[in-house]
Amino acid sequence: MRYNRFLESHLLNILNNFDAGKDKADIFLKKYFKGTNLGKRDRTWIRDRFFFYMRHRLLFDRIMEMRTDLCVVIAMLYENEPDEELNKLIDEIKKKGEFDILFDHSFPIFLKNKIKEMYGDKYYKWFNSQSEIVLRTNFRKIEKETLMSKLSEDGYSVFPTEISPAGIIVENSSSNLKNSPLFQNGLFEFQDESSQLATLLINRTFNTFFDACAGSGGKSLAAATFFPHIQITISDIREHLFKEIRSRSKRSGTVIDTIKYQETEDKLFDTVFIDAPCSGSGVLRRNPCDLSLIHI
Image 1 (cartoon, rainbow, N blue to C red):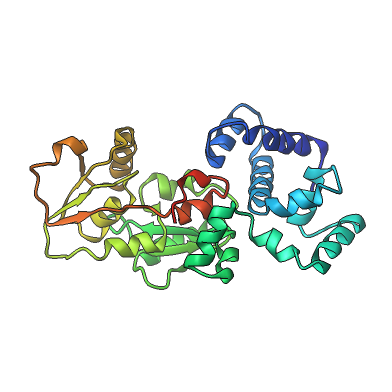
Image 2 (image 1 turned 90 degrees about the vertical axis):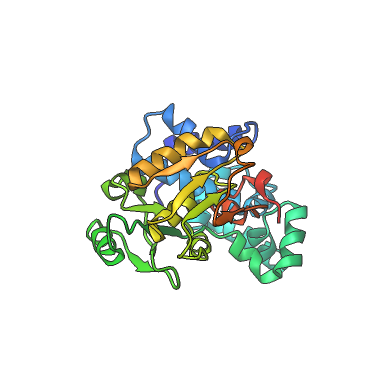
């Protein structure tokens, strides 16, 4: 097991300071790492174990009633290498029939009840698992098969999504795909398959498209990929996101018009997308401690 006091001190510092802040987990970590000289390998080690802790926090809380070395316990459970003492504690928890609940049900009570009500007990594990990395091919610049070959050449294990014609699942990404020249040159975007499929509902004979709750513009960029003839306009009450949308559209080689929501009153469009309310379930799997956005 790779573990040392240097890594422990950083992980413990993150655990102690995260709850006191207001940032989402990924933003918190980005800010933290920016203020250090940690290398890529160390950042990955810390990030993986931090999110593992957040996904299974109830179990760690129980274990720490009987131990004090939290970071060591996190590292041992993450790598499935518990010492004799930890094995005994886990066996005791399992004998009480509590292990699976503590491991897979690390949600606030209100969210736990909602998941059970809407999806059933078997979906706790799914909600608490790490989401897979899904890419959407930018057909304006490359074919999916060609992109998959290039990703494979770069060492990634990839396979196509089940339904979306543009989707690619990346299995073994321990590196930052956003630093890949393939991404920086606009050959793909990160997008869940469900979002890709929602965009495919557009009638291909239509000429104008309006995304009323665009966020950072993922569905609009997908629409531009699937239907290059459609004129796309987006809006969102969070106007600061327009800068990111413009940057993404430039990278992908598309043109997307932005408009303030107050200026849409007299506009007409063939297709209008309104992604509201957002359940936030995808956010929960990618950012397990960002519970403020969950509305299911």
